[in-house]
Image (cartoon, rainbow, N blue to C red; front, side, top):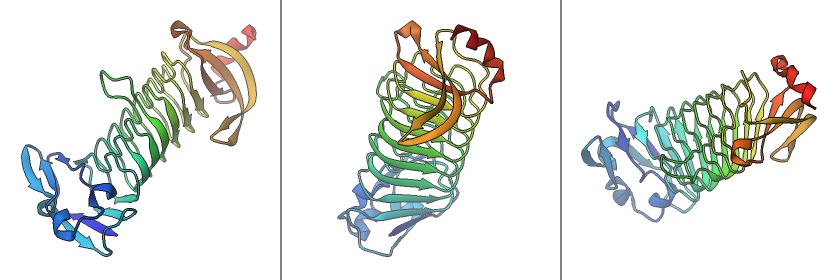
Length: 271
C-alpha cells in the first residue's frame, strides 16, 4: 500500500491524474515523489503536496490510500485499469475518468463528472456525488461504456448522459435529466428523481423506487410490472413501465414505482 496525506488544505484545484495504480506500478519511491501535478497554474511534483508512505513495493495491483480531504484534487484514478484507490474523505472532480478496471472507494463525497467515459471497474461513493456522473463531456456523445458506479447518498443533474453500457446505482435522490441521451445500460434510483428523467433516451433502463414529479410527454405507458430485473437481481414493484423517448424513436424504458407515484394513476386508462 502507498499512502498519500496532503501536506496542506488546498484552496485551488490540484490536477493529479498521476495518482493511479497504473502510474505508480514499477516506479521507485523517488520516482513517485517526482511525478508532476498542477496546483492551480503552478507546476509541482507529488512530493511537494503530499506526504508519501510506502508500506509495500509498488506493484501492478497495488492499493493507493489518500488520507484526508481530497475535495480539490481532480482526476484521481484517470485511465486506471487495475488495483485499488481508497480515499478516506472527499474526492474532487473527474474521479475515475476513462477508468478501465480496478476499484475506487470514497468514504465522503465526490465532485462532478465521476466515472465519465469509464469502461470497466467499480467506483463506490459513500456520500453524495455531483453532477454528470458517468456522463459524456460537452460536445461528446461518449458517456459511460461499462463498469459500475454506486452512490450511497444523492446525485446531481444529468447522471448517465449519453450512457452506453454499465450500471449506476443511487441509494439516495437524483437530480434533473437523469439518463438524458441514454443509449443503453441501467440507472437505479432508490430515492426520488427530479423531472425529465429519460429525456431523449434511445435505449437502456431507468428504475425509480421513489417519487418522480412527472413523466416526459414523449413517453407512453406500456404496462404495469410486478417486478423488474436489475443487474441479475429482481426488484419488487409494482412498476409503471413507460417507453420512449418517442420523439427520438427511442426504445428506452422507465420503471416507476406505482405505490410512490399515485399521481400517475390517470395513465392507467391507456392500458
